[in-house]
Image (tube, rainbow, N blue to C red; front, side, top):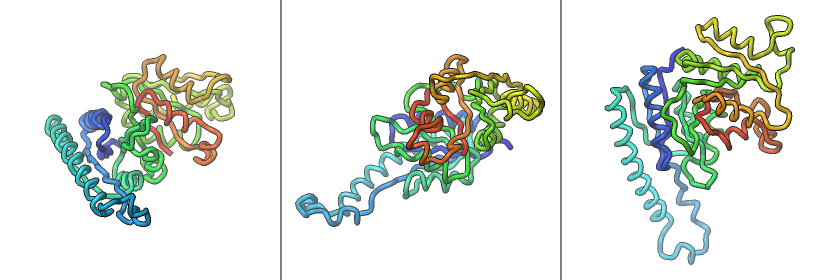
Length: 286
């Protein structure tokens, strides 16, 4: 299925323009409708009630939230103008949405009507835009694939050299299926299995999972190279990012949270390490 609806989450962060450019290029490449979603996530004035009156001084909670809302509205107007200019420059179909609500919950609700959701990786330096839990909350609640753009780096090309992290899981299969429009347009596709089990191959004795996926992709007209590697001393997430750098990949495709999110948070895992350390845009599905 082609990408015909792309939603990009927009905010006031310095990196917002980078993911907007990526979303715009994807929409232009696929002839997709581009929706820019700006979410104003402000506390209710009720949150301030109960504090000692000295804390609020003479200002009422409504005044505080009102000033926050005025600032958010000004930032949203600035981004709306940038968004509209990009649509006009590229001759794209698109729309602007300004919504109140909780970040991940609101993006997920709107994203259910899109083929792809583009969001930013939260900064580890503690900035509030995008919210720290937005990518995971959107991924788990939307039922749609995400393209997450790192908080550092420039990405003038996305999807020409694609690395697929393949472990034969249901999550990885969903990610590959959703990424087929991107894989079909790539110049180079590499399928990497890390510490593969031969019993996960399906097409015959001696075959391995990456080779079987490459065969499947070939039936879609996608020429993919299958690679298998063994890594005992570093995490699989680090292997994926290192291999992506080695081959010059500009996009990583993988499934996320194959085991419970709570267990990953407690013990670590590929999903958690990729979300924290990504060095290139990551297309993921759950």
